Amino acid sequence: MKKLSSVLVLVVLLIQSIAFVGCGKKDTAAGFPEKNIDMIVPFGAGGGTDTVGRTLANSLEKHIGKPVVVTNRTGGSGAVGMTTGAKAKADGYTLTVVTREIVSLPLMGLAQIKSDDFDLLALINLEPAIILVKEDSKYKTAKDLFDDARNNPGKVKMASTAKPNFYVLGIEIDQDIKFNHVPFNGASEAIPAVLGGHTDFTIVTPGEAISQIKSGQLRPIGLMDTERHPELSEVPTLKEQGFDITSGTWRGIGVPKGTPDEVKAKLSEAIDKAVNDPQFKSIMAKSNTSIRYMNAEEFTNFVKSDEETIKKIVDALK
Image (cartoon, rainbow, N blue to C red; front, side, top):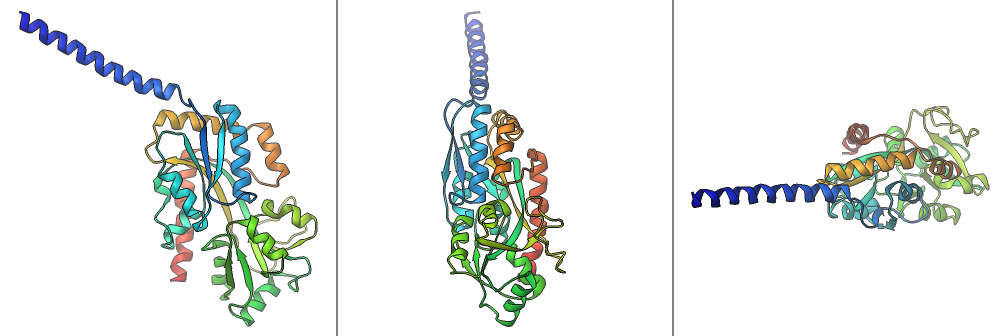
């Protein structure tokens, strides 16, 4: 009887111990977040990715209840920052602004990081690309630029915001031409290179160069979209100029693979509220940066689809 009682006591203690551990896990998720959250932006300060990240971080603080601290980790056309984010502890305290390079770099064999290394939470922004030259450039139209590159292979200099740059690769493949790619870390470095006359043109998103466009320092010669931009209605699309070429970029939020579901749910809910916050919408509008929201499932499917699109370009290059 005594032996039986001892066994029963051990069983009870074991059950209590399991229950305690289970409660502990729930309490950890329930208490999230208990400290500051880090957000990694994989491109330089001042560019479009930085604008999206910082604007979201400011809005997110209000809805998550803790400061969201932005850090720019540049290098490798976004690979350095996104690799750092993917390898962070999977506890929800490190968010990463993931960009189209999370798809393009691994397909080109230029990075080990890939989209599957993240649990994707939300798409925040989707932007068309725009071709820009200095205001006194000899290029008045996209045709002028393409013809010069065709007549002088590898001579026309492009300030490239990433390597590889899929904005321009689509043009090169479609037109069978070749530019001289001069690499920079994001639009914040590429735009001054054009303004300074060090390169002939760049391709960025409208929001990244809206002030220089509206001040007349940069002249748009083609929007890589199916329709004109609402803030730059005078700029013709490439399609209008006879070139069936579209391209753009996107930015979203990811956390390391394996982050607890309860934590991801809290982050996703807060991001949804942040993106729909009137102040967030106002700031994004003032910077001419579009909002294109997708939830975790939609964003994940979107990325898989984009991988197929970029793979076609990569295969054509091979």
